[in-house]
Length: 76
Image 1 (cartoon, one colour):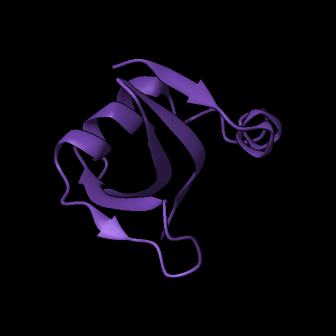
Image 2 (cartoon, rainbow, N blue to C red):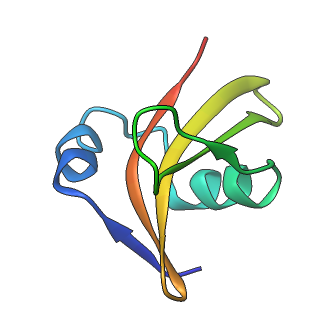
């Protein structure tokens, strides 16, 4: 997958070092697309990440063949 990052995610990524691109990709591939309630063109993915069992939420937009990551964070 080709990722593009928002300015918000580039700032937050410095503090969330344990959320890597492979975890984001796993979450997007193994979760259904959920419509975001604030933005019409944004999607959410929520997935439990093995082996830690933590739940990751990713907010993203589809941009052609790529995906623009808006933010990602742990829900627990």
